[in-house]
Image 1 (spheres, rainbow, N blue to C red):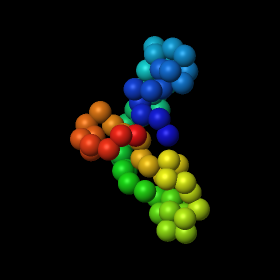
Image 2: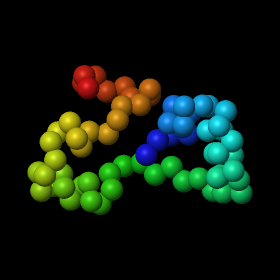
Image 3: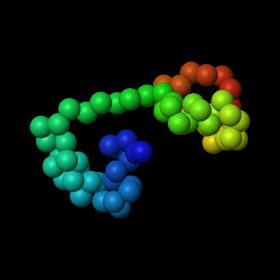
Amino acid sequence: NKGFVDWGQVFGDPVLATAILDRLVHHSTILNIRGDSYRLREKRQANLLGEAAIRPPRGPNDRSTTSP
């Protein structure tokens, strides 16, 4: 569950990550789906997860005033 920009850190080499991504997404359609999955939503409703585990990661454009 990493964004494409984070793949360089995963592989330890941004050039290698770029080459791998280029081959994976060639002639592909990329769908960026945001929001909770059904499983996560059900676990939240059943109070099976702690609050820190269910918070979505904060992005650079997140303007909420609460601290993480």
